[in-house]
Length: 322
Ligand SMILES: Nc1ncnc2c1ncn2[C@@H]1O[C@H](COP(=O)(O)OP(=O)(O)OP(=O)(O)O)[C@@H](O)[C@H]1O
Ligand SMILES: [Mg+2]
Picture (cartoon, rainbow, N blue to C red):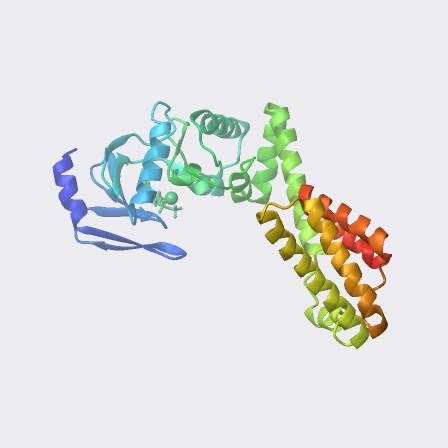
């Protein structure tokens, strides 16, 4: 293959990614297009070599990396050249699994090859094994070849079993394949069953246990959370809130000045006691809490806060109920 000539042709091919659609191609080269997808378009260079031209460099890097992991196996097209946005590789001939299964049965021999393929994927370090049947080709000699491997690497989300392959087989062939796996690799079958059941459970929960939110109803009953309609309660709660903020801020300041937290708590308590004694005759004074027991609970609460923030929430609940 003449790489210099190839580079010139590629300059005359523009490939742009589109959102949720196959790439847009402007081909001013003499190369015939063999196919395209969301990441790139593939052109015939010689009878045995094609070039995949990508819409962006990252997809090209990924596919090149994924292909390079499998070059020592016979499962992938051999790489012949690489540029920032293209990879020249073997043309994969034969018939893809989608077409094949339209007229042929899924035999145990074919299932055996598919399991071998999954073993190779795992061995070479593919993180996400979810090939679709149209990306798998059966060669005239009976072995398999796989294309379009970029999505197998550099993934955040990975699947523990070949979900896409199974669903892409269709209900009937999925059952047949699973039966073959059960016979030939029973432990793997058990594990897949486990994941399939978990998936069914997840689907069930989504449908039944988490029904669509009834926003109207919630709006009606959420009035129960409103606190401003009863003036007496409102004043008490507001006072509680302000006190809480005051205490927090005051303690921060005093600690920053080098005071001991326990001493600050004591002082703040004494101050509130004084205020409450003075204010109790004037109505809403929060005098529910009498001196020492409140001091104790506050101090405990403060100490708890220092070790574990959430404990203050528990104490607040306790105080509300007391
Ligand atoms: N090595 C190859 N040999 C022969 N044909 C190929 C080869 N690679 C790709 N093709 C053809 O080009 C088409 C598009 O290639 P491919 O699936 O790799 O593109 P893609 O943009 O990565 O697809 P996707 O959107 O699924 O990621 C394939 O469906 C196939 O018909
Ligand atoms: Mg792809």
